[in-house]
Image (cartoon, rainbow, N blue to C red; front, top):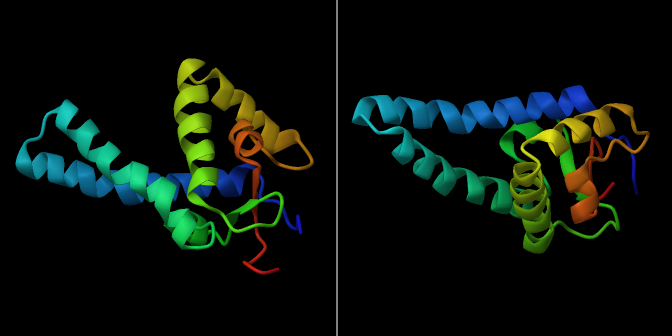
Length: 138
């Protein structure tokens, strides 16, 4: 069930790819249309929240960056990723916990993924998930 945990560097690479996939087109549009920083932030939110919440639910735990890196989000109990799981992982884990701690919890999470045998970060514990190289159904 819990095979081939993905570690820090591959997860970082997948996150960078996702950030580029979302950020570059938004930056280009911002320049073309002369958008303010506030408008860019709004567009980024409108695009990134559904991307990180819905795409893994619809695509077996993958985002484009994770798929490119051959890793995916999986539930610890083996069940299919659902909207509730992703809401816990992304909204509670990333936005609330990492936001409230001004990024300190994100640094702790990076060390957790790098040093813990199970490679789980704070948001993984909150949502009951882990990131794996295993394909869906393995």
